[in-house]
Image (cartoon, rainbow, N blue to C red; front, side, top):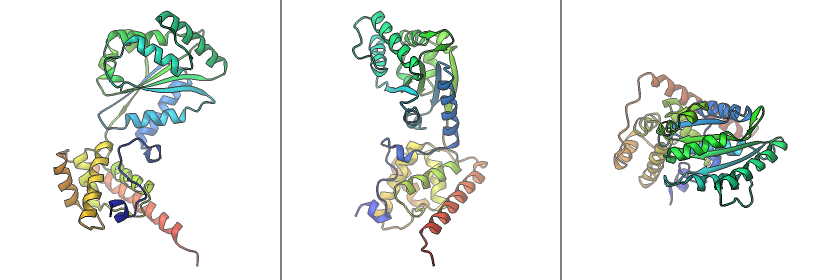
Length: 304
């Protein structure tokens, strides 16, 4: 029997594979969305999102792409998978993503094609948006200069292309390779680790989306998950997934603190103790879960 059957889930609640259904709309993600949307709708040009490993940058980038519907936006997401990208490759792929059917072989030709396509998009009353994930891979001044050139594609009164960077903190060092580009950052957002309360809400959110009808982690287990994962969503997923598997092997109905500690040690997770100020935050998160569970029970009770 898999742990899905043991705990009554319809699917894995803590997979790290991208899945829009599991998107957790934390307060900081809501604020980032609002800021990025404002930057795009106001044609600010360049906005940057930075955060540590596993804090949800890619998830946010995909969420933004979903929110930028085709009626009002021509948008596309490019993921930088390595640092050997050339300016020519970059320019050609951005042109393709913006709808240039056959980008030329010459940089100036591609720029002219892209400019003409951006004029078409603007004439349709739409915004052109390129989202760049793993942007810390852009490690040369030539690449930064290319983006500065793209931001110069404009008509009187407004820019024709908006660029959203998502990356690790070192992205900001890369931007400073071309100081004029760094000065053009119109909006900056930073994603940090989840608080203790948000960790509790995050765990319940994913359990519920996966078909769970109850909170299978007890209070001490949730606190331990937050401590050992450091509030990092990717690590929370990995740790909780292992805990559920172990709990099923032990035929437990509830995940307790000992299981979390054992799995954290097996994964070589050390984490940091949560600050005392977060204890109230955790209580608030658990209260929110209890309230949601009560509403769930009310909905499931048959009418007399």
